[in-house]
Image (tube, rainbow, N blue to C red; front, side):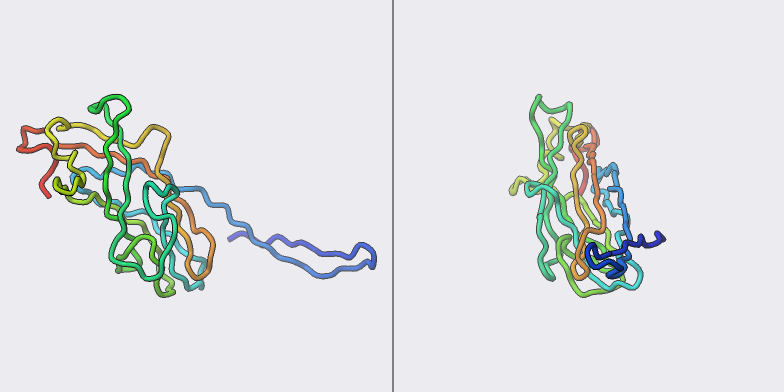
Length: 198
């Protein structure tokens, strides 16, 4: 653990010391990870925790409002929805598909909406992401079962990871950042249908 840095406040005109100030500094590097969501795989991030002895809830927000929620709410629901643009050599130049993801957080043994704060606890928090099942009627991830895109690799744009921020509800401040690059590979059409069974 880092030792505190001592600063001394002194009086210019009257002379003497006014008091001491002890500060501790923490530098956190964002977590950079590749996330493979093929075959409806589930991604669970590393755990984000408060300092020992601090009781607080936490939550995750997106950096981009086009991706997901950028603000928190109290209690929330079971899940949120995140939208991730994906490129592929199977698409025409400049085209993208949008991966719709079920976005939650895991807190000890419970899961709920990624950007919801709840009761203060010593539990750590992880971001949990998974592709929503295909729903052609609602245009949800319908590209996964499109025969045109069988055996294709879809990915986030090069050098453009999707950023999520872990924040503390009760204690305030940021706990860390996630920089995620996504990849989704569809199954060959000869296996029955492009995509996977839900």
